[in-house]
Length: 275
Image 1 (tube, one colour):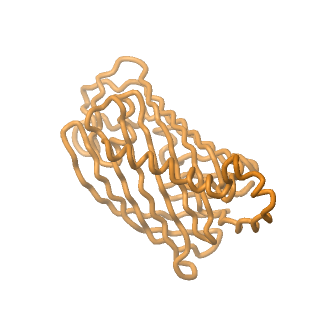
Image 2 (cartoon, rainbow, N blue to C red; image 1 turned 90 degrees about the vertical axis):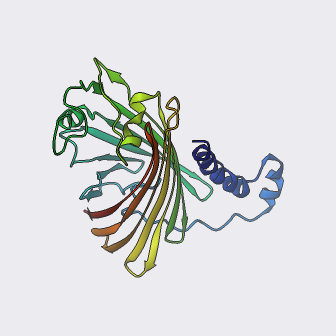
Image 3 (cartoon, rainbow, N blue to C red; image 1 turned 60 degrees about the vertical axis):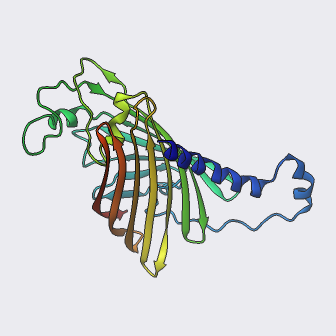
């Protein structure tokens, strides 16, 4: 757990150091005033950039096969939901444009999810069951907030993120932890008081319409001894136009569970349409 906390701190400090270099400290005001203003930052890509601090353009829709449906409500507000899960785990997400600091685009993201119907559906014996059928699943409400900072290097985007998730329970509960890769990090907050999340992500072009996307994400759980998770994913993406993107890659997980540590890797695929 200690080294995952170090990762989280580095993710927080790195953009602050860059901002300090760009903005200068209080003692540099007169020097900055005498220095010509820097050239305007290059415009950042605005299509299929859901994991960054950039927002979908106003009036544009983006729909992922497994990812969320995003809509640019107004210039500074983006709404999203996962339609594939909506009827068994109602969810809503909002991203807000917080403007720019130097060459960094800033945004905040808030997400509300009610996973109880899905967990009750999966509380059964046999195929598809991940929870004991004789354990009561309480009402759970996941609340997640995240701050994002993205910088464009030409057409390449570098993003840092820091977030927190709480998952309060209401009603009688006999629920046990879901000790599965990629699931435990997103439900462990129900057994502690919060989950801390830190991430760094990069995406951009490789050659013509072929590009890449890669990220590292760390989870820490105060109050749950020995529990942590680090996930790393990467993929190649083909963006044929502003209307279609296909991506294939992998996601790796190294995590500490109540019973010990475990390493897993899984293939990933995504198709997305914009209109």
